[in-house]
Image (cartoon, rainbow, N blue to C red; front, side):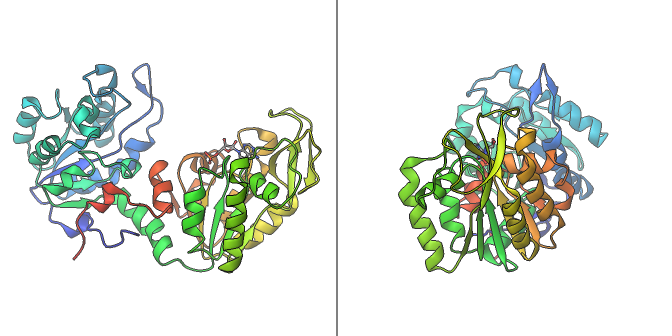
Length: 397
Ligand code: AMP
């Protein structure tokens, strides 16, 4: 389910067309001001393409959780203001979503104009994937473009329902997600190495189960590793562990062995007597943690082994930090692995959420092939499950 056969913007003629674009303009706000403009910037490639190609551009997005009611606290006005500044053109914001104001604005557009509909989630019909609501949205455009990868795992009216009524293709951002993540899942340059970390095994079970059938090497670090260590009979002190997942951990280790997938776990870890930065900490071999210490990071020997594997990879997918990287004293493992991935010649894909934050924070973002813009959507993609927001788009043939 790589979605490599989905139509893209280049497959349709947008000249003079009304193009409805579902963006992810769900920006963080503080006192009405946007505190991080990344999502707006990420949407510009598609918007600029459409303006340049003489389309009438109608943008749609949700913002926050207005719970299906009009609430101007969640208005897209700050996004409109920012877009006007960046695009250096007038951007009209509709006063309603599917009402007469939108209708009027959309009916009076010229080629190259940009209109943005008010917050889709002012209507509860949006998240309910209501047919009539989706049909009404579709009536404003000739073509639908989904460029909101972050909500692609949800079947909402503006991401899924709408695709039933007008030709539907993916935007620039979604195309890049499909080409890199879908490309790796369907046809990876080998060796294919997946690096998984983060706090819990339970969050990553689906990913491990799917990737174990595709990768050559599975590297597991972070808090997740301690459930595997305990399953192998090692002492883990007070490290984070999911006791109800010990059997599963054993099964996964066995499955990797049966499928001849290299399963690398840390060989040494940095342990600490408290879950805080200025605690007492030391490096120990796996299984040699004092009873009252917890694992907080991977150790230097592990960094060496993991980095060596990364160096020879053809494709790398990384999801989840190697340790408690938010604390400076335990960020080294994540930093060194990020550095190794950044320096490798492999296609490097960083899967959303915390891993993307870590790579950005550590200053390696422009050395990666792709940093996914999704959190939940990326996880769903890596789990091999359907992404309705992409599945509904038209196929190339
Ligand atoms: P996730 O959202 O599952 O990718 O998990 C990310 C979180 O895992 C981060 O907040 C890390 O601090 C945390 N984490 C990583 N390693 C450990 C560890 N050894 N013990 C506890 N938490 C960890």
